[in-house]
Length: 233
Image (cartoon, rainbow, N blue to C red; front, side):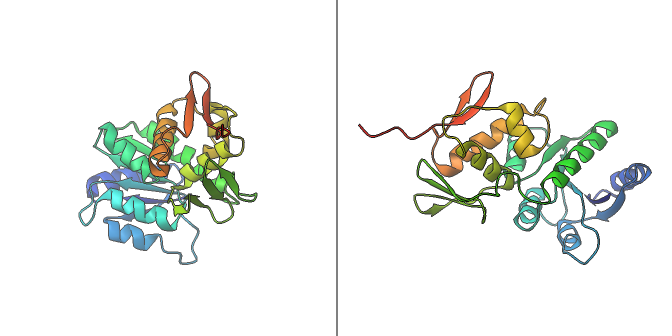
């Protein structure tokens, strides 16, 4: 499995490369954001299955690097950083990161997370999970599943890959409650245990970006539903 490690600390990188190599990874080490973005340009080689991205880079902020990666590639990204505050975690996930690991971390946990996001990436490579049918329309929102574009009353709304898939899933059946387990199975291709905060962040981001705070309702202890439009009168 090819992995791109983006880390400017040579000692940290050397230790990670050694451990990852022993676990069967082919690691390319990028020391800056610029080098990381260059490494992701297709060159005929096997694609990277995971990007391990440190946020404290010498030439540009890791959040910017994540945003630029996500604009051009669906490769899973794990942010690795000493920033433990929840706002940084939320910001990273909103930019399209698939996971967020705080230093210091347990190496066994990091390996497990790498394998988990790699499996999710494989599950979505042939086609996005909920984008195979025609367009959907609900509450003034037009969801073009073929082009993966969303507009609200004619206004284009840029969404991350997971935000789009989450919205498209809920919009298939407005009013129907989707269980958390079902959402993670269909959108993330994984179990939901321990990932509740990730789902909350993506729901909150959808409400904000669509400027429809009452669009998605949390059903306590069950999951979420898209509120159907109320009939006039």
